[in-house]
Amino acid sequence: MVNRFKAETKRDEQLPEQTGLEPPEMVNPVPRPTIATPARSGGGHVATYAADKRKGGWLVRVAGPRPDMFSGRIIPVTRRDRSIGDESLERVVWTGKDEDTGENVALYKFAPKPQSLDEIPF
Image (cartoon, rainbow, N blue to C red; front, side, top):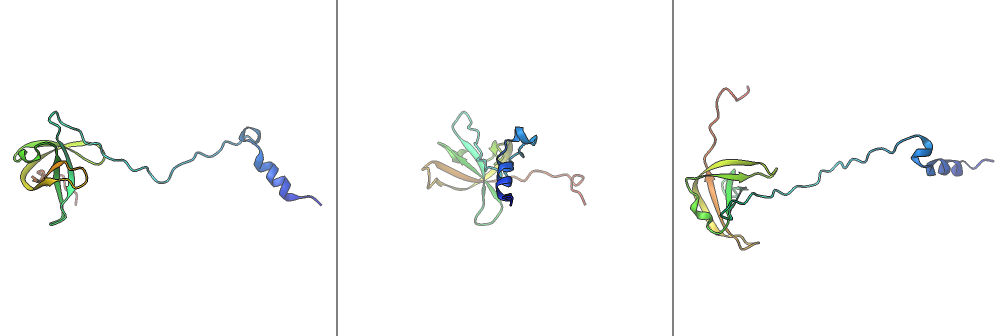
């Protein structure tokens, strides 16, 4: 009687060079999370987007030594994918200290970007 189990384990123990087969590529199906690293300006301020928990939508979060002085200005804002876009800040919604870092923070409403009716697909 032939022990089929031993034959199978022997075949499985062979190296890829011996079998002529290459091992399959290991693909990680879950992408690794990326944390946006906001670009700091020369003044030490950082601007990112933040969710508006009261009314819904988005705000711009500015952190730094004097975050409340940017009303009416166009500033670079870092997105989660580390790309940078410019936003025109309209008014301050809230100022205070970050609970985690103790850093000075201000939340701003920003102006919507003009959209052309030609760009909207139907």
